Figure (tube, rainbow, N blue to C red):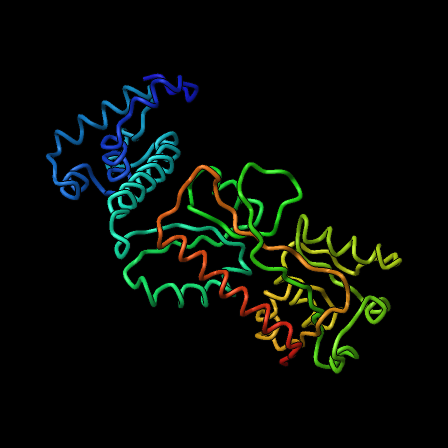
Length: 318
């Protein structure tokens, strides 16, 4: 059998969902007989299907030199692909089947982690009051992936920081999320009502975040006429908070991350500087969303409005 992975796409696309499901089930089973039982078909039928898949791909998917059912190297790679395709197909079919019912439908959305950990709980609480049986699948992923998932129709909509690059997707403002300064309770900043660049210029600075988040912080201190050299530059905000907790400096984070800081016993001080990120709702322009999904978006808007109002109060918990 030819184990060349560079087979033509036309051969691969001839595989059916049934064939992929049979292979995916067999790849997770201890034997063909167990897989056949789980699928409710005969073992000869399952074996014939597997053989047909291998023939179409030109690959050996199982190691037949072993007494136990074991995937070949190509089979392990194919199993990941088959699982994803079958799962996505079945989710899509469930969604289409339920679209006529506003109470038994489903949706999938992608959020940056700070929104998933903050606004999502409030928005979903509001949403489930009216749609208690509606299924919502939430993916908390890096902001750079949100637009791609929406564009590829993996999710119905997403929420992320606005990208500086132009996009064919619709991006509606949800919330302007200002930054806050985070320090230890024994820091000289802890007792302040707010802090500007002048207040933290002489303190060790820890910059956390990637991409536009980091660039916004850097641009802010340059606009303030400062030439800072951060003590640490890290990718994860959680790492920055751990370094602050260790007494190694102070950091700046978007306000939606402030609960993480407070849970770590740190002090959150409003930042007196022109530094904020714009969070947007991202969706396809050519895709009409069902009523319940539009209602879920509105619930996020209500949660964002409540968050903005709470932030205007300037309250600070320790």
